[in-house]
Length: 639
Image (tube, rainbow, N blue to C red; front, side, top):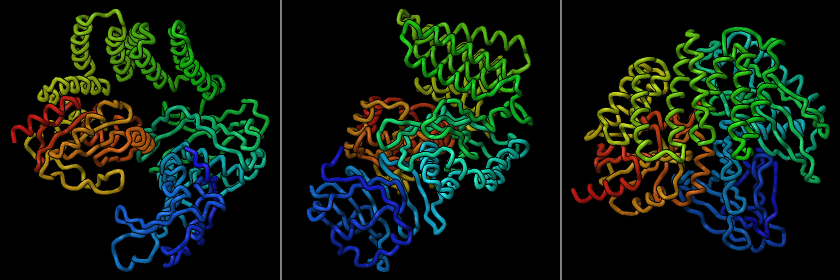
């Protein structure tokens, strides 16, 4: 939405300036309030034209424990600024605490004058920073936002801005990482100070160049204990190209290759310096090798030999092929899938130290294409791949991994076939479960066996055979007590065996507005509505809104996502919800191992957990919202 009277403003307001607000702020005119600018650069906020300022409106603000002043645009309804203080405490009565900024009617930025925290909100992003005399330190920032910071830092020659998102030797030491990888990380971290200025000069990016897109592939994970790591380390291997568009003229684009990125706490950081060609001479010949990827398949070593080739070449070929698959006509999809699978196998042969990783990736690729109905022949590919691994007999975990996907691929190929009759699908489902049980006997206590048991447990939950589900979950919890899958299984056992017992949520869980969840003993039936952006159904949310309006039910939404941007997109898409939503960020390699999914022992969404008025478990796993409404009617009739 574009407001006719607004002009975009992209300020850089010094930190000291924003801290000089006085007690008289609440009596200010629109002109005085509009003098307040975001403390950070490149924040687009709405500012009316000079001849429109007199038409702006100042109004009292009292919401969520804060009081202050709204500043509305010339139309009298579109917000421009909110200047506020905490409502409680006499000593804070005249002390400004926050300034909130808006763009197109949506809050996009918030400055806290007491703590120095600055937050991007809405469609402006999800960064959280903290101001200090030496500059901004990031508390939380996504890889996309890091790539935008890299672009702006290089374009303006701002070393301090770049170092705020660059890996440091202190970071490396904190990770506990050792060996050749640690040496290379420290070398690249040490090159930032000495090499940044010459790189920025050689790239010669226009100062007004705009960030366009971060084209990284999916992230990976270096597990705790590998190369001395004291925690799991999320990594973008040789992260993708940042596309940029020059603002002036609007027709010239450019690209740079960032290289590896790692996640330290909630902050993604760049390893060393990017690579690229001078602006305007983009030949596409630049490539950067990953520090991590050549070594993740085994201990030690310093990279890929010349005979094995540069990984970046293979990564580019895979990315290109999978991008082409999305645009391939239906009658050519199978041939393209063949090409991609063969490419995976070629890379596995060329890079023996990465063979296992690429075989696993190829098996997952085949499963995805089989389930989508694109590639029914993928089941035969999986069968052939498993036969090879079984004959080799030297990697039981890898063989089990592929065998499980072969079993699933054969089943999903039948389901995806439009000619399969319903009766045959039911028979195939029974055979699938029998094959999973046989697989668990053949490969006990492997990671793939744990996956199979979790699948069997979920099937039991769907048919409300909770005792059977508990048996499967218990096996996983006992075999993998320290792994996420074992912790999730143990939580599922607790959930399913808590009927008639108190079922409190963790004390540190908060709603998306920062408030604690509070007691679930509300006197009303409480529904924990566990939803996820990756399985959104509009009908489910519409029906849940109706349930929440009954008057005899207290609904608490729990997002099973772990990325804040996904949650924010969902909240915007669904619109107003008559319940509070809980969100706990995490850094698992996949959404189904998010903190909330693990803590509640959930494998799918939506799932509804129903508690009575005293917070005790009534129903541990209602698997559809329509069924929930029927169950609630029964509970109401019994009371």
